[in-house]
Every structure is written in C-alpha cells, then in structure tokens.
Image (cartoon, rainbow, N blue to C red; front, side, top):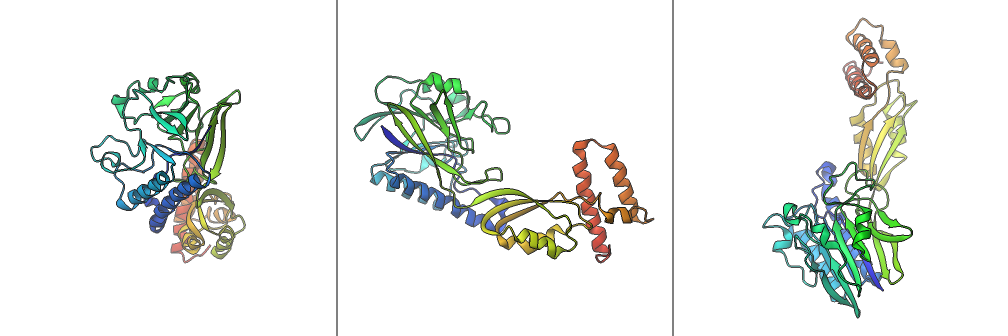
Length: 376
C-alpha cells in the first residue's frame, strides 16, 4: 500500500491582471497554497507528491515563485517524500529556456520525455512503484498515450497525465489537449492515474473501481472555479484505490445574484451589497430586479469594493418595466424618443439579442439622468 498526495494546475506566477491592485496579493495567495500542500503531504505522511501538470502558469516563472517551489520540494525530499513533476500545457518544455530545462529540482522525479519508453522504477518504503507519464510536445508525442499501458504484474503502477477526458463536464468548453476516454484508462490497467488539466474535482470510476481523479485547481484561478478547492489524498493498495478530497484554498471565488428591486437611492444599493461583505472573498455579483432609476455602477463599485478582497459587479437590472421608463416615454425629448425606439427594437430582435438592448437602455438612461442632475 502507498499513500499519495495528488495535485495539479497550481498555475503559480500567473499575472492576474484582471484583479488590478489585488493581483500581487493573489500571486502570494497561490504560493501560500503550494506551501500548504507541501505541509499537508508531510502531515498526512504521504510517500509521493504527484503534480500532474501546470505547476507554473507559464514556462518561465520568476525567481520568487521558482525559489518557493524549489524550497518546498526540497523540504519534502529531505523527509523521504518523493515529489513527481509532470510538465503541463502552460509550463511545457517546448521552448529552450523553459523552467524544467534550466532550473534544478534536487530529489524530484521529472517526467520530461515526449514519449514514454519505460516507466520510472522506484522503491518506496520497500515497495516497487512504477511511474508512467510523458511531457506532451505536439507531434513529438504523437501516439504517446499507447505508452501508458501497464508493463508488468509486479508492484504498483501509477500514471500521471495532463489531458482531456472525453465526457467530463469541462470537455465542451476547454481546449481538448491530449484527449482520452474512460475506456482508455481501463485498458491501460494502471493502479491509479493522477490527472491534471481540468480544474474541477472529478473522480473517474466504474463499477466502484476508481481509475483516476482530477483534483482540480487548488486555488480558484478564475470565476467558475468557485467554492472550496482541493487536492486528493490517495491510498493505493491490493484492494484498490481510496480517495479523500482535502480543502487547501486560502480564498474562495463566488458568483451570486442580488435583487435591487425597490432601491431608489445609491445608499440603499450600497447597504444590500455591503450585507455580503467578506474580506477573503472574490465575488462576481450580478444585480437584478426592476429599478425606477438606473443604478450608477461605477459609484456602487467605488463604495463597496473595499468590503471584499475583490468585487466585480454586473448589471442585469431592468428599466423597461419601470414606472420611470413609462413616465418619460411619451416625452417629445431625446430621451423620450430613445425609450420609444428601444421598445420597438425589443419587439423586432431575437430573444438572445435582447440583453444587449437592455444594457444599452440602462447605460443611456444613466447618462441622461447624470446630465439632468439626477432629475427623474
């Protein structure tokens, strides 16, 4: 039996440009999550730490991120825990100055070949372990998945693969690098395959036998990677595989809706948003409801953003159905003409185009109201 801590898709040293002033701290968050994973491997008495691709967000990470990784992996090696690294798609070996070609990782097993000829053989606490994996490099890795086939009956046979499982929830909207199927996993007959590339936790099993797992990104990189994030504690033995997801993220991402119906002043909207405050939360908040006057999104953002680690507001409030819009519609003014024309367009366009008109309606009426000094 062997105990493994399995992670992937840490994306260290990402830019996080969209987060503005919060970007530097978010880079620190990701490094702290890596350090938590190292500590967890020690605490859980893992014998292997498997990193199944995209440890770094790009092939040439800066010295701070690289130094943290080297120190963390050395800390494991000094305690007899074997770190195993598989390059991914973001930190690939394509360029001559890629980090895995230039930097040293003492005590680490680096699966850096484009084709797997023979698995790497290790003796771990007296047990024979065979590691299968290859660093995908376009045409150089053509047919490389065939090399994942189990070679012998003795010992434990563990695979690492940074690829796309057909049928997974992310299959339809992510790039399909190295596509494979559950049937491929069965055919390879490995004891466990540590997967990376898809960012949501997913266990691949059939008839109660676990073949593989995506641990997902351990720290949410973008909205959609919301809520708790995990690495996987894996026990592989003669009776199969046992998995335990372990929460490791420092901050959470969330997407929520907030109904502003009935708000007539900015202060009321500020109060409703502030009720959700959390200094550790990255929140994408969609504003909904029927308003009698346009909400000043910029002012609301300015008043509320310090109540969160990061706040992104999206306006889906409706003015078409408001008394305000009905009141100005008959006016022989520019804004009256605009309301009438917008209503006409709403009856002429396709359903999927209506949100665009609603957004334009909100933005233009906001400007009319600003120019008139807030008069309704």
